Amino acid sequence: MTIAENLKKFNSELPKNVTLVAVSKTKPVSDLMEAYNAGQRVFGENKIQEMEAKWQEMPKDVQWHMIGHVQRNKVKYMAPFVSLIHAVDSFKLLKEINKEAKKNERVISCLLQIKIAKEDSKFGMDEEDAASLLASEDFKKFQNIKVIGLMGMATFTDDEKQVSEEFQTLKKIYDQFKAQNSEFRILSMGMSGDYKIAIANGSNMIRVGSAIFGERNYN
Ligand SMILES: *Cc1c(COP(=O)(O)O)cnc(C)c1O
Image (cartoon, rainbow, N blue to C red; front, top):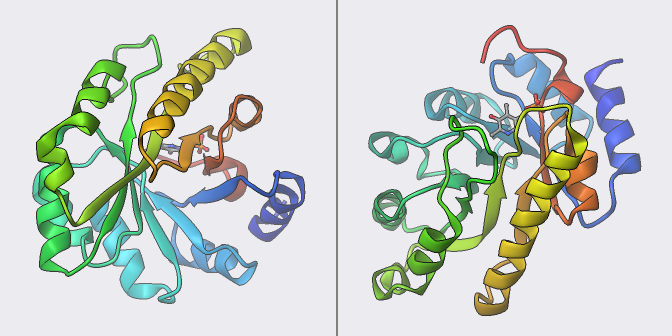
């Protein structure tokens, strides 16, 4: 199937409240333009410089989501244009984003990444650290960032029960935080292999790469 056909299928099947982030990392601009011409406007990248290069080339109504781990010294490259940063996992990073957003006279929306997978390799905060960050006075002083929800990645496994339990855990944390943070409205969970389980467990933003653009040669 072509990229346009894959997108059409997603758009016809996804519930209306679920935003599809087309994860275009490693793919050439010609592939992104095929998606763009099929109506897709939200794209996800995991490397800041690659995203910046594509931003330069693509039409300006694209919304760019940074879905990968963020190094603080690179925040400045995306601060002028990024529309959502999914994987914020420390106060220090949030502080840097606030600083660079201010320089650009912007307010940048962010999600906190929560570690839900049992594997060690995944980034993210635990629930307690995220809760104390959100409750802290230092956080409340930031005027150029807005934390609007949470992001998480399930363990990479065929065990659907485990994946489902991990997503349920994140949904529960999201609901608790949402009750105390009026800005909360995004729960980013689900990728090509597990988005159906994620949606069944309350996701309203999925990050899908290979099921739209085909397999990647490298990560
Ligand atoms: C690459 C990536 C995705 C998309 O993965 P697919 O399996 O190709 O859909 C989603 N989220 C993050 C954080 C990624 O790095």
